[in-house]
Every structure is written in C-alpha cells, then in structure tokens.
Length: 391
Image (cartoon, rainbow, N blue to C red; front, side, top):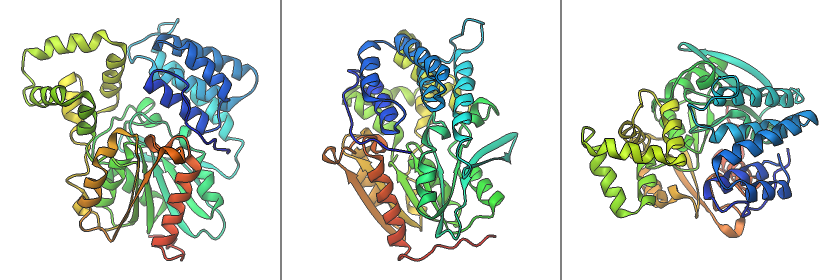
C-alpha cells in the first residue's frame, strides 16, 4: 500500500484534522476530497453525515477500502448511545458495515491470513503473514479505540522486508470489544502471551501503537519471549499528558477531584461534561472500552493506571522510544528514556515538523517511522536473523 507524505490543515478542529490526515497518510482518500470534507464538517453530526454519504458512494463504486475508511470515520465520532433509523445502536451498525468492506478489501491480499485465537470468554483476531526464510518475528497491536484494519497496511511492509509478522487486537479493541464484548484492563501481558503461546513464538519484537506505547512495555515486563519493544509512540503518563493540556489550574482541580470521588462537585461537573459533544463522546468511548468505568471520576482514575513510570525499570529488553515534537505525550520523552534503567539498550527518536512526522504516531510520514523501526531492529540484532524457533 502507498503511504502519502505530508500533514495538512484539512480542518480547523485539531481532532478532526488529525483523523483526516490519518486517512490521507494511509492513502485511502484523496487530498482534495478530504479538504472538502474538512471545510464542511464544522460539527460532529455533519462529520458523521458526510462520511456516511461518502462511504455509501464508495461502496456503490466498488471501492471497498475507501468505503471502509469512511464508515470507520463516521463510527469513530458516533456517540455510544446514538441510534440509527431502525433503532439499533449507530456505532454497532457502522462498525459492521465498516468491517464488511475492510474484509472485502483485505481478501484481495492472499499473503495475509486471518485466525481467531481463543481467549477467556471470546477470541483475539490475528492477521499474519509468513514470508519464506524470515529474518525475524514482529508482533503488533494498536491502542485506545483502535481497529486492527486501520493499520493493517503496516503488516505487508514488514512482511515484504522479510519479517514474519502478526497483528492482533486485544480486549477493548475492535472485534474483541464489538463482537466479544471484552473490555480493556491494564494487564496486557495476558492477551499478548496468549498470542505467543498459540503460534509458539519466541525472540519477538513487539510494537505497540498509540496507547500501545503503554500496553507493549507492560506485556514485555512480564514475558521474556519479547526481546525488543517499540513504543510507537511513548505513553509515559496517559492521565498526566491529558490534564497538563488543560492548563495548570484545571490539572490541579482534576487531581483534587479524582482523589475525592464522592465530592458533590462531580454532579455539577458531570452535567457540564455531558453538555459538550466532544467530552460526552470522549467519556462514552471510555465507558465502552474500559472495564468497570461508568462515570467521569472513574474514567480519569482509570487512565492513571496506563503509565510506564512503574513498569519501565522492569524492562530488560532492547527498547525503542518514538515521539513527535507536536504530540501531547512527548512532554515525558526525556523522563521515559531515563526510566528504562535496566533495559539492555535504549534508543530514542524524536520526529520533527521538518520531517512531516511531528504528530502522534508520525501521521504525515509513515514511511519514515516504519523505516526507523526496521533499521533499529536490524541494528540491535547486529544484522543477524533473530530466532524464528518455536517453543
């Protein structure tokens, strides 16, 4: 798949603009069309309407990738309790429509295989590719509210460069959440170990995308079959990064409030958060994804657990820490590097605006970040094959 280079001002809304740039970077939609949608989508309801219309048109034209991306865009910003015309949950309807087109598209890649690995009360979906005479094993997963299919173009990149590659979803993500109804907890080592057990994998490079920058190190801290870890990008302190963006006074307010869950101000704050579409959507995402989270206070206390501050000293592997200069999580870049006190090796890479890679997960220059990861694997492996033996 072709990756486009460049990060553009498609929308005045920063969140929408990032999503539109994701679609462009992945090569799923043309720049002019994204500019038009960004200009028209001045609110989230319009965003959903425009992308549903674009998805329907793409489906009629037989363009399954574009249709899937458009329905995913509509699904992404749909409220968790919104209903469609038939009275079904809109988010579920859009997810299934999106998956129908993603499945149709990826069926055209015979080198990509799909299996379901039994796990707890459901299963973990895995896409994988095994080139002949592989030079190593790479396992990838996404992060918060991600769909595996959005990043699946990364799999052929590594496979074509000689790596046996596996991409899976865990609790709280995509199919595991929407079809198995299994929510996310911080203990990511359980689902990751289930993948390694099922395929008998050892001497693995584990790449965690977005919130995977916490999840992957967490898994590696408790499974020595993982020998190399990539934080793509770092998530040193999920809660801290979000609250610091609010400003010092609001950050201190949330620190106080989360320490006092019975404070009467939560009732007032809950109403205020519910009045705004974005915060209502944000919290709805959290309630849907995280285990036992049903209130704003529980949400903010929950995300405090997603930090690598405590687990970083447990990592004894080679670690690659990626960050973009314009990403909110990058405020902890130096702290994250310093925290890896027992790692076999620590490499940091800070991407810049001049490289078109300064935003979260280097949206704007995916080719560069993938090349960076591949070169790092080669370097820490001394250019030799990593083990592809099985346990």
